Length: 261
Image 1 (cartoon, rainbow, N blue to C red):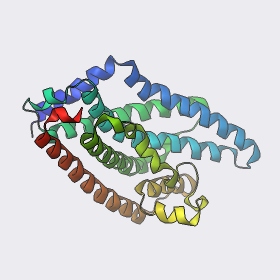
Image 2 (cartoon, helix red, strand yellow):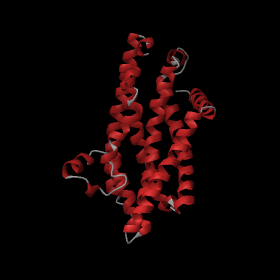
Image 3 (cartoon, rainbow, N blue to C red):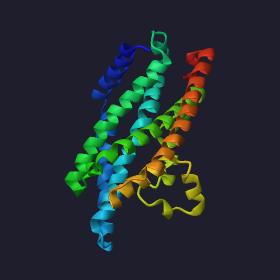
Image 4 (cartoon, rainbow, N blue to C red):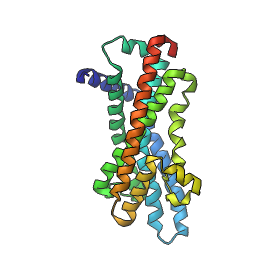
């Protein structure tokens, strides 16, 4: 695996990001709109609640943390789609670039953009609602790490499907991660879900993270055992998703890369 080739791909995607209004809006515009809509909604709700600041902190922190999951999967799936739309996939892999190096590069791009988008949205949240997401302190690191791993395995899973079935299923690049959002308890406690949904949520790693974030906000502590369970589930899904996307790439190599368009 070549560090120079990985760095070259990371640089390529950031140069594209710099000159793409679409990508800029994904990082800055949509998080701001979400914060405005949900923040104003929670500001209205707090007039009916005794602890007025608590509801805003819960909802806004959920929005901010979900950005990390979104960016983790988005950079994998949408960058793959960009290569397909521009019919550039063949050009990439007739070069010395390995598929594993491409995967590492989009993972790095996802981490960097998650940091940028999260930091920007955190500043907006503080300016608009005085929500201090960084008050989570050290706990923010393991919570963010687990969230972005979730984004990776969702991205690899969807990327594998796109390689197998082409751009006709490209909507999954945006829609797939939302399938786990109702079971993630982003804006509400897990106990709010019906019994059957709570059983599903046990297998959704993000549910442990958002429950943990609420625990930190409420009590200033974190149940590390739940985070270890979350890590174990994430690693199982990540391993399976990596095997799937590698298998998908090997399959289209046998058919010819042009078949995927």
